[in-house]
Length: 313
Ligand code: VAH
Image 1 (tube, helix red, strand yellow):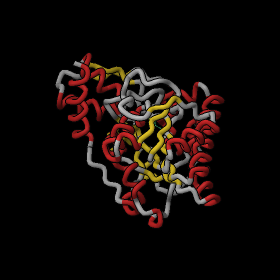
Image 2 (tube, helix red, strand yellow; image 1 turned 135 degrees about the horizontal axis):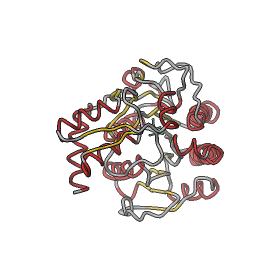
Image 3 (cartoon, rainbow, N blue to C red; image 1 turned 30 degrees about the vertical axis):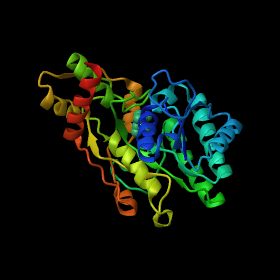
Image 4 (tube, rainbow, N blue to C red; image 1 turned 180 degrees about the vertical axis):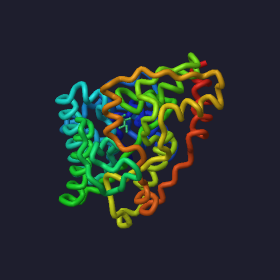
């Protein structure tokens, strides 16, 4: 029985539906700080929960008889950069409460890390699974500390903690909020609605990306793998492609020939993007638990345009 925090977010909303399909609606409790106006998760158990209220989190988890906690509630990179103190309190306070809840309930645990856990001194091409991590954003500081905290709960208390360093995630169900890689989602919405997009990330800025179905698949594969086989735990590099805005634009133009891209760089989010790797190495994930993404840029673009057209038009 799975309890999800941040269930109304970009990952949470799709993960809730996917896990309910897999394990049964009643076995997946969706929680978030706000009520579910979008009705994306009200087909099953839903509960308002502030992840800074650790006592209530344990009570809710115990009442639901959760044996797995998936902690997704957090501020993303750009929002965190604008509210660094609040970001530290929410990202680290929420994570600590979720880890404590998993410890109290003897539950398995998942929280995402990110390519944002790397910084300017990290090798940018073929970024290794184990390498230097000196991020220069509050979000990155939260992600590195989060990776170490989740490792600590495994080594010190035996909590079965697991996690993935996600690249930018692209999806059509729930737009992301406050990320740096969000341009790669917005561009599809704008392509469908206006056949043009003004990118806040500069031409030639490479970032790792992955389509949401591959991200959900990776989470489930990792969580279902025999823990004894894992050499790493809370920070597997996963990625499906390394792209710059112009690559996404040309993939869209194959489907919508009159699409055009323009650039108006946002200095803060450009600086965040440039501090991250261009292309990370996912060998450890492939070797330790069979990570195997299905969608490349063209396949993702075809699917995004088809699904978004149905949704928006
Ligand atoms: C962000 N989408 O942009 C998130 C993610 C790797 C990017 O962490 O902050």
